[in-house]
Length: 349
Image (cartoon, rainbow, N blue to C red; front, top):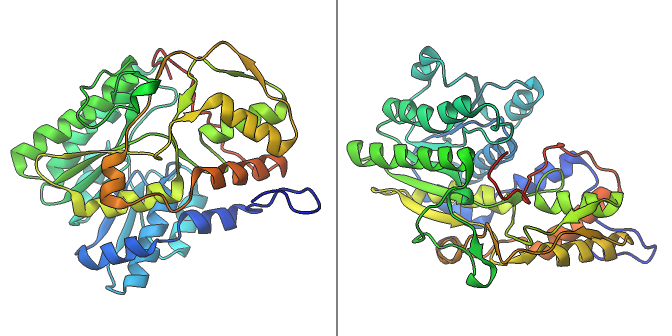
């Protein structure tokens, strides 16, 4: 998506077109569905990624033709999200998982994608963050001891790694900075313990920056370039992955669940320079980026070679996403107004 002869950037023009692209199942996912038996339930389906992931699961199930149920569970504070999922053919259940009666009333299913968690606003609400991220998982596993899980986690469980190192591998010792990251590691440990106790197969899906046009580290950088705001280079390198690929990888990972839980780093294969990203956005949007501070020698980076080996390279390269994001920002497309705070180095979100 380079500039066309008229000088305009080409990309997605509507939220509907974007949502369709992010929920379009890959051929590999449809093949995986043929091997995966039973219904699928997504817990925490009302968040940023949940709707497109759940819709992708439904579309893949329809293409595969087995007639399985795809169930979305969330509080659904935004009724529009529930309505859109229903129209997509997803079975929607409004439920606060912290409510014991609601949790027990959920249907038994063999496959669960666990997306429940708290990050933004965790500073000042540490007790709630720990309850959601580390206490609730134990109750959920206790309820679904016969299911397999893909558990959304985060690269935040790792310590900052030297930029030259290529990112932390799954063998790296955790070193979470701040209470949010500590509570995410707590989530993993609870699943790890109960997986061993009850032989519950799991994948700990350590995702490091899924991106799309309305949210993500690429949008954060692009908006600052467009608005002429300085970009903090303290955290000078990042990883990211197109959200459509992250959705497909998560659903395909149900087939990788095992006891003890498999740890899987999930992100793009590149270590990306924040400065270079800003300069690329500046060229595409005809703006001159502004910078502040200097790049530190380390950053929160993940090595996703294992995921690439098991699940393949992303179907959408990061260069393409950069151009889509630039077009979205120039066209004034709607955004979620939830900055990633990728530049934060003290773990306070």
